[in-house]
Length: 454
Image 1 (cartoon, rainbow, N blue to C red):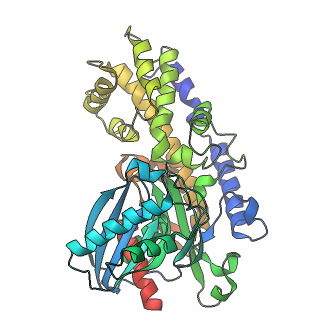
Image 2: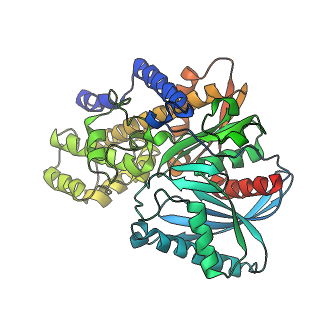
Image 3: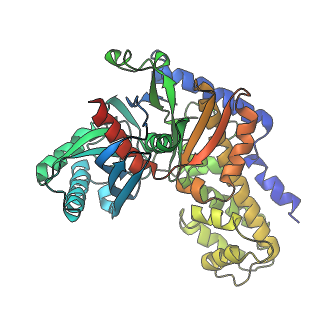
């Protein structure tokens, strides 16, 4: 049985129906403000147009490169589209060394161009003309399909000389400097757009793309009439355009203060980007493990966990040593564990603290802490998804999802569905589908659709 005090400790993470409704209303208001030119500068949910207006039909053909930069690794992919909703993918993962994540931007792009050249050579395509879709998963203002100005670095990147610059141009210039491959950057996109495109390739009703991984963001298909920020010459051709919500910044105007906990405040205080990306800090893999770590420290302090052990102060110092000591993947492993054996949980506890066999009670307490943190994240994501689904003009809407937290957490999908059931309008039919490699295949599809429209 769970201790009443443990439930009390976690109460701030449990969102009431009133709080869910209130966050939903505030989120919808911010989206509307982000879309309108007059209120856009003050809005936290920026709703940048992506200039991607055509969804794939499934008949796309040809070979395309995709480059995916959104975290500590990046991927290069060769995607062969074969029509009939079919594609084969060859890919390679390359590391971004820590010093390049915070060094000069030119060095980062030179490194990427070097890896691209190696990849193309390995596939004997040095002489082929290759259109490339560049998934760049950081907040960008798009000025066109292949022009994206970096607004701010997130996720631990901080390269000088890139904020305020066109990253498509920077990649193009790095490829030109080498001069050893015929690669054309034809589109820049966010991983959420890639997710939407790769799901739409398999299901024509997909209108929302969401990532819950290291970071958290979404995009959706909006009527062009509602998107003030599009360049005037763009409006007339098509009825709709994909909008990159950049919802990670929701809450920067205080909208989430009434649901943020002391632990959220501490995560923010100690982050690289203080008082920014507050919604992301409550939902994304980069932060969830740290939230659990801080709650565990409080539970140790109040003797709510490992009460039988005299080594509690030692456990606390393990948790204080390093913000990343409790990895977000542990949350998924612990919630996936079986009662009463708790094999994974005990292994995690042993690795962290050297404690031989944690009691069933301790395992249950740890599991409940993880559950509350993850369930709140899923609820918040679902609140945002509901707002976007309700804005789309389709009656039937598929939500394409990706990211390590969504993919590997055993209950995230179920937690989301509980909230979607409450908030999505009754006249909408909806479902969630898992994306197959949005940032790779999706980027190639954007490149293909872009080449086709040309």
